[in-house]
Image 1 (tube, each protein chain N blue to C red):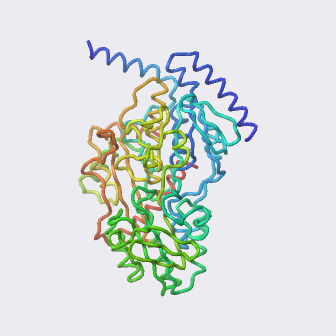
Image 2: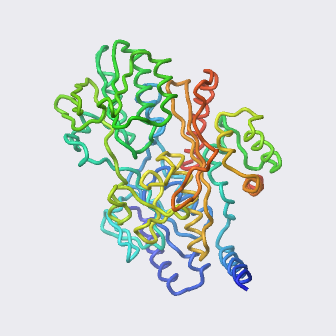
Image 3: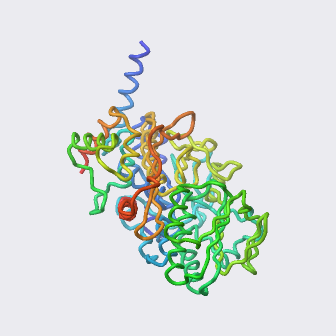
Length: 423
Length: 95
């Protein structure tokens, strides 16, 4: 922990004591502490939005990693046409915006005492806590897949070393080898991500190892942007990708890392390169704070993103169940800004307005072949529901120029959102 | 009487919140725009600081399909004119 951070934290404790003595909402806001856990698209966006909306708030961002590695576009790294460095972002600009960035993990939350415990044993008091911890892998959900297995059968569902490991395995594979991917049931991070990955692995194989094949074992019978992906597979990679749906026996019941074997109800598949995208849940701190339910995810109020089970705790991004909104970086960023507005309003003694949110999610089937799904959402019956008549996917029958333009827009989106969050 | 109490309550909340907020809260639905429309020289154009009337005209054209789009047609259909007017005015006032 830096000296600057220690000093700031002492100042926080003083601020908290002062806020207790002053009943007026404006003063409560002026000295209030908001702690944000998780420095990804959700947490970093929320910290910045809070400081921008209410500059007098004391905002602390807790994130143990010094560098963030983005998941969107990490499939390009696996496909071999993007450097991992293009995925990495630091927190200097966030600190420069007046946010205390603490490179520490949160190890516990006392919801009654409104205190977060840190890895070094110290603690931080908060008036409002925002959780944006992303996902954890469920090692209890797929027999054979444990923390050691990820080094042999990478998930690559948290970008970084895992992304590079899967890439290296593809590079080391012989032409004519078999790649097998497994895809979990809903919900999980990035609904179309596995199918984009299938495309971009096939893009690499087609160019460098054209006798190879890719099998996608799926625990579902339908998936996001399905017709667009399947048309792209036929058009770009004929005969290379085999998708095995749930009803065809695609659900993986166990894996054997010693032989890189996937076991399904219908048989076994032994791969040269094995990519297991396992079942997931909200990041660990959500359960420790009492914000995750039996499903492993966090139920939230659709207006404020406040947890339905942990008072004064708000959950955004992949960790929450946000009705119709998928677990995407765009969703996390949009939710972060709405949550920041709600938290600032609540701390000022006001009543937050119902938000209206957008999600846009691009997928690439090749470097110059993109398509998207979009949605508009608002609170309805206690959930974030699709606004009827809006949203939907790119047209199925669009010309290649349209796909090329969406690929350009995809890159533009990534540049813009990472500049807003980290730049 | 009840209506008057509500008005007073809203006025009180507004007054207490105002001094602590440097920026006014964006109107409902405006905050998501910056997910794509940023300040950089990206392919998707910047919209902050543009004329509010121009923004409204463009969104109306995306919504009725008279202006071709990849994504904006699908998003514009989720907003009513009443929702769009404050959003356009707020975007126009941003740097």
